[in-house]
Length: 547
Image (cartoon, rainbow, N blue to C red):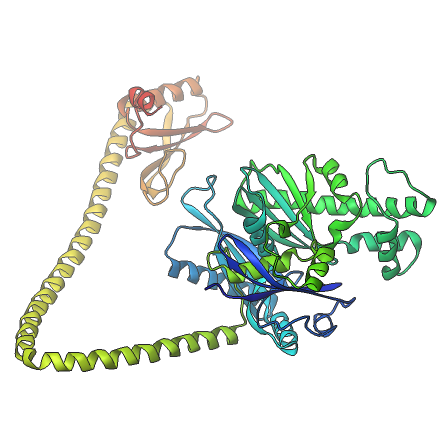
């Protein structure tokens, strides 16, 4: 049976509460409540009013500056190794910020643009923030299930209640202080982000234009402002408020555009193109905002209403009326409750370390008790049945003990032979390299003696194992490389032609060699790099076959 939980979204204007459970492919709402306030401090927001109903176990949404969503590309590794990598990442962030952080992570759905790697979504939050929320929840009589980023709650609202097609959609929840944004392609999450900057941008712009407080500006925004293109204003005040709101609308438009660009850089999906934008949150109710953003983004922009497909038939009449009034603001709370109730939902569950340890201990204790009960029953049954078979078992133990000793001895000898083979292989490789280096040096000296033009002499000659990109010798497969430094006697004529002729003879004598030839600007000096041990080049027929 699905769990019934409460999703809670604590905002700076309203607290939203959705309680219910998943049933089949939908979510059944049992209760809905809103507590309106004007508090910016979390503790004050929790204390702004009593709980609208009995909260029970609850999932709380996180957003704002104290929540960090990061993306890391990693090779496809076992779960235990991935957990270890993420633990290092979290410790690094904690050391940098100087604060104690709690975290959780999940893999993004596999992206066709990225082969042999996974993209990890890692969410971190200050433990002090979680403690403030837990204290507020306890004060309303609730208990914590977990914390999740509001952006992922928005994603669950989309996957459970949206019309999913083969297109890329940007969903934005516009709160008063914060903006939660996700990018999805079909049902798959590409990117989730929380930003500072919500409907307060409009309040600030109107307050500055009219010279009034933010609270008064919010009233003017609701009463007068519109972003409708080509709107006809009924008076000068409406025009003044609307033009101020238009400037703030440009800031919001830039935040959405930057999200797309940030997704391209973070997740490395360079060909990303948004097909549609959906808006929710209290800030989405601003008159004309969808059409304004549509004109700026060049794609359709609509309001997102997941409650059309959720089951609200069981809500009390008072709750249903509240939901109708606040349904744009309640999307995140619905997503939180759905995420917590559906075990198959894409989820990140952040908990303070002490709560996590307590739960792990409790779960381990329950399993230990259950295991002890089962073990006692099993041992009693086995004792009753095994008395007559004791001698047979002892005989089998003795036989197996002998096999074990032989196996251990075989394993010991195998390990010794393996270690000896490894040492011999290393020695053989070293000898092969030394032999190859010596033979290469001897052949080059012979060629110098035979083909070096008159009037030239060698100033320096060295050979060692090294890396040389010009000679196609790469790191990890170092080869013996000879370096020759020479010059021509002063007065020697046609130096360049003589050097070109010499290099031609060198390549003719060693057709498989890689040669790097570099004369000095004056032409009197030259350097040669040479190796006879570079990887063989593919011939023309092989190259054509590879194509």
